Image (cartoon, rainbow, N blue to C red; front, side):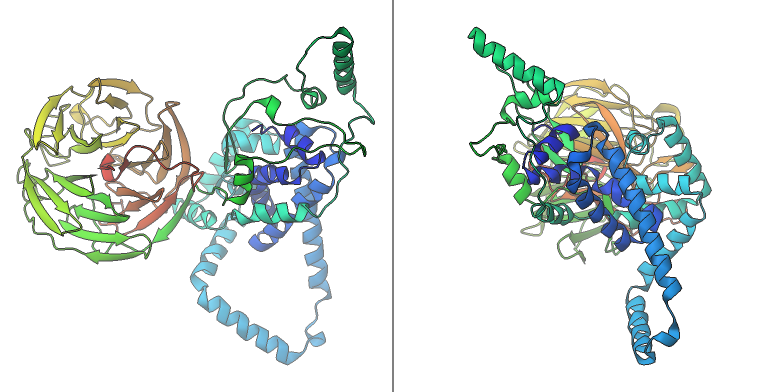
Length: 619
């Protein structure tokens, strides 16, 4: 489906009001953020955003340059915000206590007090954020709001505000420097919960259906380009030639029918089809233009819930907390295993509740885990939790029977290995022969071993290109990816590699944005998300997205606060970041739910879903 603003506007003017939903979805977050940066009130910002789109729909035919639609939206938003501020100012000027009924005032005040008390934590947080933002110059406050509330990247902000990308980068950097790290974390967390829901777009669509705008005539007022197109058709008819021409393309100055690539608009994944199948302009006998109906995926799209995402939400704390916990997922529940406290707990995302399980294995601290065929494999670890020696033990836990079964030991016991599963087989990767993280000595391994659960046997595979420990692995689309870690001589790595189990080969891929170790990775819908990490003196709170197809990194949102040695697991397309260690707090109990951009996905995630350190949930 074609997604250029000009083409969508043309469809709307031709009578297809539902197409306007594409424009709403594409720009609603930006407009909402801009409105909030000026009004400082979420409800007022939403009201203005709705008014902006309704006003713009009514005036679509007056827009002379369709490619400047977003600039026009920005102008309309600013003007409506000014009007809103003036209206509020007049209301305050006219308000007088002696004109009001005292009893009504007292009752309203009491109701207001009760309401504020019930949500005081939220009000205090938002008030603190407002105060922090209001202390900034308007240009910096605007950039921060567009980035955190609007979810916009530097290039998008640049286009939206009609300023250079360098200017955006400079303002964003200065704005961040003016605020404390905790305030930025609060902004990210709170703004993530204030974004417009998918229902907003559908509400606008229902409203614009009742607004009549005159469809574009196929004859009257032909532009030069359209006149030329009509002339070509006439010439073709006179010459008896069969020239396939899409008149709507000529009218818009667009290319003739051709294949188009898959595009993504706002929160909506849109599958591209041939241009020639999208639209045509014609006339019925009554002179009215013929508007193409939404078909197939397009109708299904407008009837289905719209995609959302790139948000972080706080969930119930893990009871014990801790770092180097490993996770595995079975039947929609997350199991946290091992860690510094050698615990075993179960989390149900549906009820947001934790339960404690019996952990009979007392000599296997910091094991690695993964799931294959709905049972959890617990591999390796530390005998005492304090450098007592790496253990080669492999245990299998069945959540249905609540039983543990011993399996064949791994050939080469070592600390801090990563484990991933592909096609029903398990791969143990990397590690170190010294447990103390402050000890620069010891050997760093690049070795890889394959375990077959069916035969309960181990096989040596090709080594990694660079040996590492405290790193992360993640499997997607039948391949395993390694991220960061610590190399030989305590070198902090940004490098990543791709392993193909079929060919038993390793390939260098694009480096991570920053060198770090102790991060957690998980894959959703074919993309990998890296959470947190450490670079000796710097803790990270960032969530970065890696696209294996494009071999490209993209900065997403941030967690509430920086941490490393955390764990992640995926349930229903959402990633749960669990526990870890921070600079200020040794044991972190925080659990945050990350919704990737585009969720809910039209297509279920393919391949395996990883948990902590790339530990994989296999089918």
